[in-house]
Image 1 (cartoon, rainbow, N blue to C red):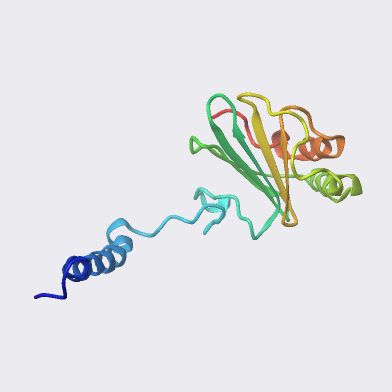
Image 2: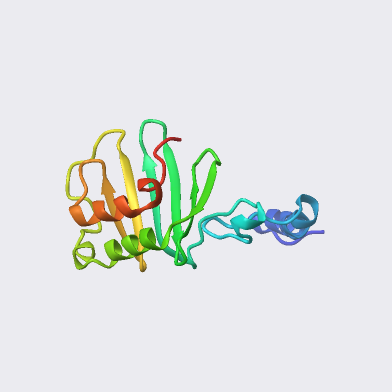
Length: 170
């Protein structure tokens, strides 16, 4: 079977095999490996079922990520509107809990403080070598801070988070 000359001949001979491999590969993944894992930032089940839960962007009041450090940390904390929270470390450790009504009210007050709305989205200080980078996302606005100091309004948010934010251990 000849599809043309030169480069067209090669692609004409290879293309049907590539298409078949992609179709068979994609179609067979779910059946062979079981259900697909939830995408990062989503969750199919809650912590009350015993399943590990990822922080959920859709239901989150606030999400905080910490990255960097000497060990290459990449940890996340999500607090839902109802005060339930999930913390996940890069190592796979998952912790969950629920804030009390008072704790949740303090977090909401810190996030809704007009001073927090004026916190710069990027740090203005120098970058600390092997330091941590914190990203706080609230109402589709991400504020990034480093270890070089946090504005007081941002520190109030961290003080109100469960455990002071996501862990900085790997």
